Length: 119
Image 1 (tube, one colour):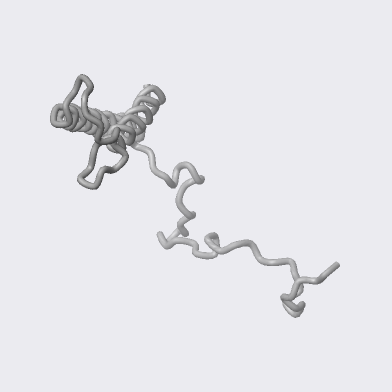
Image 2 (cartoon, rainbow, N blue to C red):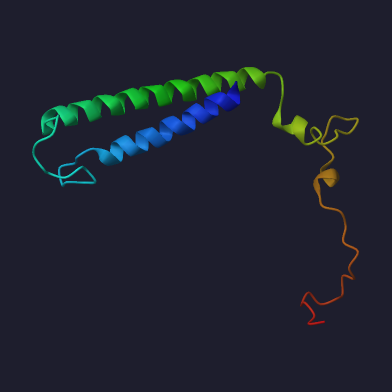
């Protein structure tokens, strides 16, 4: 279900981008040009494009909200830390073992220079 809604969201986003780019702006924009004639006058075309923008925008927000609700329901009772093996081990006195958070010790000689060799 989530995959279908993601595809619908992608198509709505592309349609919304296309409708916004086709609208005639005050400076001309990427509109169809200023030629006269045709089935729709400039005023009615602007109204239709504006309404279409509103429809796509509302549909985009509704699908986004639906996806958010679905993913929140699927994620109930889980934590991000569960995916990584849980929280760091706590000591018997309840304190976190900070040594477990450090990277493993290096096997490189501590006196060796840190300059890479050209071998």
